[in-house]
Structure formats: structure tokens, C-alpha cells
Amino acid sequence: RCAEDGAKALAGCAGLTALEELDLNGNNLGAVGAGALATSPYLARLRKLYVTAKFLGPTGKAALLGRFGEDVLQTDEDE
Image (cartoon, rainbow, N blue to C red; front, side, top):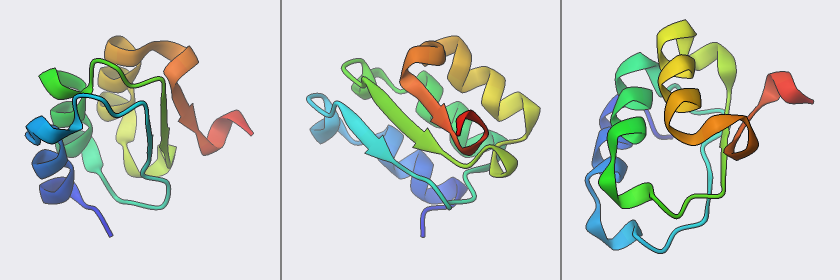
């Protein structure tokens, strides 16, 4: 599982610069983890990001939407 600390580690991983799809469904990222992903300079090529909305909170979801937009951010609420 990937919680806040795991999301922060992913966000800081320079080896992810070519990553286009990331599935973090079922992981409790929290607002802090979502914020880390949203500000990561290494996720610029991301085209799909799958997350569980209830684990983000409104602040975390807003951060991810602000960075990646509705076309990239896919939540369980979208189903």
C-alpha cells in the first residue's frame, strides 16, 4: 500500500519522468500525499492517474485536479 509517505517518495522520484499512467486506487494518499504528487516535477508526462476519492479529501482532490485536470485524474467517483 502507498500512504502519504509513499506518495511523497513517488513524487520525489526522478526516475518517473517518462511515466504516463499511475494507478493508486485503494491507497490512502491523504491531502499531503496528493499535494506531493500535484507538485512533483517528475510527473509532467502523466496522462492517467487513478485514485480513490475518499482517501484524498477535498484539499487533496483539488490539488490533483488543479495540476492534472479532469482528463488525467480518474477517481472511483467517475465510474
